[in-house]
Length: 282
Image 1 (cartoon, rainbow, N blue to C red):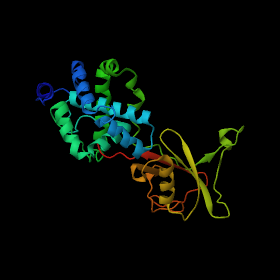
Image 2: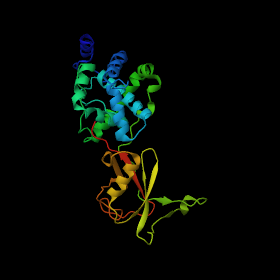
Image 3: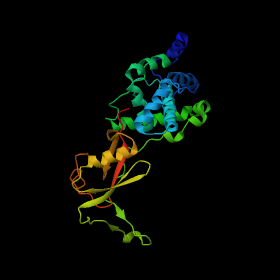
Image 4: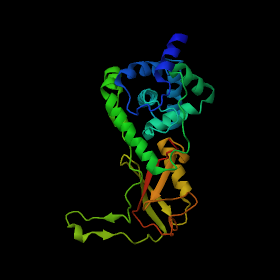
């Protein structure tokens, strides 16, 4: 065991002027190290991580295991690229959520990195402060991934899921107001819904990044945190892990449909709120 850890430590120790693009020949060694670090057999660290994802994110065992596999692939990529200080690569949101859960296990995360790779793999909680820098790290991740893609496919086969390795836009397109189109009429004859029901309530919908919509009937004076909490409960996630945007601007839970955004605007019947996973650094 000591010899194996030492071998990886020598192979991946930081070097002056080390290239960002990894040598494809390194992938089998670091992928094997990641597998040893997070075994998915019952009782293993990967198995425990999978159970936490099921419990906290409300996802199936199969989906949680798929995400843990992708996270192990990301760790292998980070080690192969010598990205020890979170300055070169950034993960997709799905992988990032797994990383967060693993980092929170402070008793085991650091020692596991040292045992597997011979060096720590640091997480930067302020990585989202500079959106431009994060975008460059995301682009670098895709370039590095493309370089070693064949090696990953050979190692993981069906467990290499391309759909996970997709980055969302930094911000959704601005949506001024919901527009309702009458079927069978040209676009020029569309109309806005500008009326508010007599009881002072409106119908709004929350749309997630997959396009799925959830509908709510609310009063203009209802605090939006009630809507957000109800939505997150339905989805099996924490409201603090989600970001809600209206007309391209983030909306807070203490705002209401009748007064939200800057400058304050009043939502109209049929309007849409966009929901995104919160990105905590990286």
